[in-house]
Length: 616
Image (tube, rainbow, N blue to C red; front, side, top):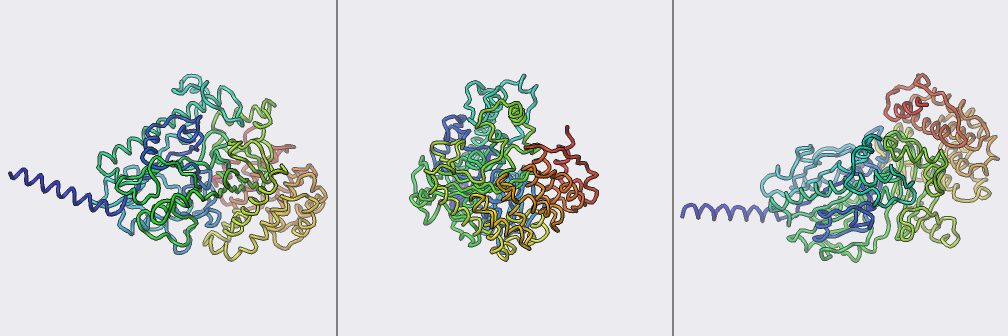
């Protein structure tokens, strides 16, 4: 009798605990690194089987159009945790040269959950480009787990899986020859922009193996939730932290770098918060800026006004409205030592890609990327003249703007921007992207070194105080999008401006127009010789070098010797690699002695460039 009474009390206590735990839903984020929708059969017929993720889908929603706003880790994860566009808040560079503060009055979104009584645990990757601040995580380590919360406390638990990370494909030729893959290399689908070689097929097969391994790991976490009796009180999100990871995936602002898998398992006890039945595929567009607001909305917590995202689940959100959403904005800036400046707008079936410095071709050296045998082989085949027109695109200058029909051309190999039949769509998306870039405003219209010195104490305030100037710089940059005859007078005016960054962008427009802009060669020589701003001189020398109007080395080496900024030196070295490795090809004698005045010779980006330039 006593034992029966004790068991009754324990059962009652357990029920009370469960009622307390069910006062608000729990959240679990399971994040696989470096994989896009192209590699999961749940999203793409050529992908790997992922039965445990598919099981989540049967009990939830599959989002067919979910996007990371950036194609690389630190920028993507900072966007995710802040719910803010990186070029607006100064977190757009990977790896960061400086960690910037959060926007005034803003906190990373788990802090709002924690304030509301949630236990927040991260296992364990952060990689933020913004200062975390107080009260974001109760725990963040490899040992963190929801089981360490107080009894009955709702929780938000995040776990990252490195199984599919890019580094898993940094194998040697010996490994390739001796270690068989579970996936048959002869059976994989090779994207049309890749050469169909044994190396690429093995790399694809190995990556499919890794995806199947991470699928099992994700299933193990779901099993733990079930064993703890909390699965039906927990929204489980599975997604990739950005695209990847085969060549032209991670680090590149294409669908392969931005379009991520997203599945949300809906718990039975909280299905009333979701306006859709389980096993539904959602067509509407969502991106990383939306994930934090979605959790806050599901938890009944107000979303801060200063974020850029909006909820796609929870109170007052209908799936009908979500399915009407058809836009996703993407950005690509610096990746380690490799500079780029690309903005994308996916709208409906079309993706518009704006390359602000299109002469920085995709295949430009990035030391970490080229640890992969497939990257090395791809470049070797290019130099040997053994690639098709589509496969060569990676190593040649891009168009300043491109339009792709993702429905008919999912691998983005046919640029429609110059096709008269698509002129209206191109102009519509061009104008919409410009509206976004100027509206943020986009801080990347200034070089990173200038932002470090003038903006990064308070990036948002700097952007707002310089908003009109940024819009003027965008106008000059967009002179690349019209004929040179139509752009010439405005370029000439900008070259004569007292604003160094107007001169800077006018020279980039000249480089984009190429030989058509040769009439500005004499002016560019004057600028290269005497402009007070080092980076403007470098852009002038770059333009002259690209069209073969003057040897660029004297100006560039002089600027490299004079700079005291590692960020400025890194950008200059990007031009060195471009002019050395690209057409027409120039010899540079660069050593650490060239940087004798540089305060931080061991700055990461500079060091990587020097290591590469030291190789024959």
